Image 1 (spheres, one colour):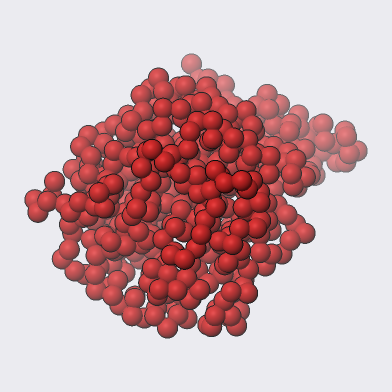
Image 2: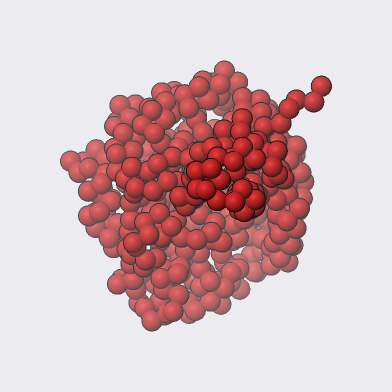
Length: 103
Length: 397
């Protein structure tokens, strides 16, 4: 299945775009877009960078580590921003997460 | 089944302004974002509010597989991002899988807008393999008695439930498109629950828009003001409760609104439609406006040329065509005077203010008429078909 909905983003979440949402570079308009039924979002550069790291394997903590290293910025501040951004996308139905199967 | 046109929800910001930042919302048009492909007008259902024109295209006039493929390639080239395969019933075309595959290969986001009654699990699986991004299934109610009566198709509701289940089993995202009117609005809470039970990603609570077939059936379909108020309350409560779990889009019948809808995001501004016979239209109902000539993909012109230069697209772009009260209205670039097809149908001139607007001199009369119809006794439908419509039998069959 496409993954659970109604998720609460935390450091251990492993977020991924749901199947109905496609992140793509639009060659004609020269912008990144997220395509979903009847909707088009234009994520900013930071959001695109975060979303490209959301592959369902990395967790939010890993993503914050990578960005903190790349931008030489405090990990905690980055983590807070990333969680807010991803939670907003999740609430709008543009993000899901991978969970371990419970036996 | 194209019950409603692709609807950019009113609360989101203007997509054209979002994607082409150098443009203001007042720009007359941009690079088209999404295209509704009505690949056939054939449909086994006979819904009395069908969004197709009253004069349907016969199958002999439909574009061929190769013609549709050429169209899809051209759309991707000019920057279109999304295509909606609609109809009629798009699955009535034998080449649908081939067309979806072609669109996916060209990089287009593909959506199937279907009544679902002709689909098999095998065919749905082939569509998924062809790269289909999303499935939207129309529902006429919550139980087969009412739902099958509205659709004029026995066994339809049960089949829809089955196909919705397959859709999720195949890991395809699902939208439930619930077309609402006076005779089924009381089922809304159960429709929301049904959407959850079907594991849908999205629900469209789409009140009927009164053009074409629906206008002919207005007296049987128009909700009361009280019904609509209750509907709004239910939607607002459900949106809050189901945040992140089920997206709910809400389309009200604009007769009861004070401001008209920004129809199609503005005439020829970001969307267009291609009819079964290949006419390039500013919206699915545009052919109802007499006196406008529409270009075809079978002409010598490219789709880009038609979008940019054709007389029909340019006629109602921007604000230059407006008359009073639109011309000097502070909202003229917000809603562009509402819907041209509705203005034409109800006033005889597409350049008039859409009577859905409270500033239209006809608003009061039309609102009162709709209100009276909503309180009336008429519940018999005129079913949609190629013969110009068939009245429902007295005993409701």
